[in-house]
Length: 387
Ligand SMILES: Cc1ncc(COP(=O)(O)O)c(C=O)c1O
Image (spheres, helix red, strand yellow):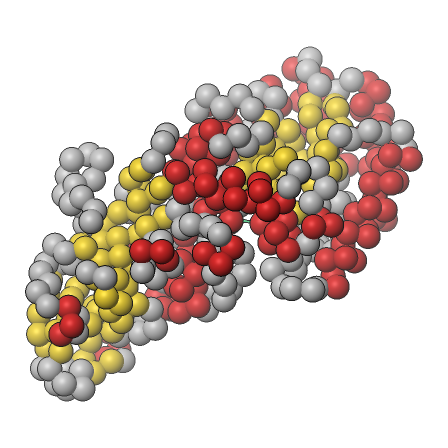
C-alpha cells in the first residue's frame, strides 16, 4: 500500500505520512460547520507534529486568512518560509529576541499585561512602524491574559499607545477551558466575562475589529464562542478534540499516518515472556513481529500492552512493554504469510481500518493532541497531496 522508499530514495524504517489534502478537506469541513467566522489555522508546535510550513501552505491554499502560533520564533519561521498573510503569535516572555523581527514582519502580537504592551510599543517606536496587537483576556482559564480587574489600566495604556501611533489594537481574544465537554456551564460563564471585557474596551474608545475565543471543540460545540474568527488546531489534523472521541464522527480525516516496517517475524514458545518486565507471557506458541519504533520515536510507553496496530488489514495487539526503539506485536494465524519488511500502520485513517491517534490516546490515558505532537524528529515526514 505504501512505498518502501521515503522522499530521499532510501528504504524506510518508519515514517509519518502527512496527507495535505486531508488538511484542506478538514479546514473546509470545519468552515462549513461554523458558517461565517474566519478561520485561523493553528500551526504551532510544528503543526502538531505534521510540519509547520507544509501545513501552513495547505491551509492557505484552502483559503485560510489567519495562521496562529504560540511562539514568536514560530511566526518568524513562517515569514522566513515566504508566508505574508496574517499571523498571530501569543506566548512570549520579557526580552524575547524574536519580538523585533516579528513586529518588523507585520506579525500580530498578543498582549496580556503592561510589560508586554511596553515592549511591543518600544520595538514599534524603534522600527517606526505600528505594531498589530491582540489583547488577551483571562476569562477563567487562569493561564495567559489580563483578568477583568487588571483591564482598566491596561486598556488605558493601549489607548495611549494607539494615539501615539505605536500600536493598533486589532483583536480582543480569550481561550475556553472546557469546550471539549458537552453542555458545560463554564463555557457560558467565560463568554459572559469575555463580552463584558469587550464592552469595557469599546467603552474606552477602542475599536478592535476581530474578537476570537474558540478552539476546535468550542467552534464545533458552542456556537456562542465563534465571534469573528475561530482558531482551529486539532480538527484540521483530523484528530478528535476530546478523548475518548472520534474525528470521523465529526466528518474529519486523520492527516497523519504513522507507519513502520516489520524488522523481524518469529515464533516464540508457550511460556516465553515478551519485552522488559516480562509483563506478557505467551499462553501458547505465538508468532510475533518486531516493530522498529519506540518511545524515542514518540510511541507512548503508557500504551504498552493496550494499543493495537494494523498489519495487512488485521488489528494486531501490542504485546508487553514498548521500549525506546521497538515493540512486539502478535501476528495471529488469520494473517497468513507475514515477513520482515511488511507494513505496520500504528495509526492513520479510520476509513481504511487503521487505529487512529484517538485510539492511541485512549490506550495511553492521553489525548490525541499528544499522540501526534510527540512523534519525534527521528521519524521522517513524507508529504502527499497538493503542496
Ligand atoms: C490559544 C489557543 N488557541 C487555539 C488553539 C487550538 O486548539 P485546538 O487544537 O483544540 O483546536 C490552541 C491550542 O492549544 C491554543 O493554545
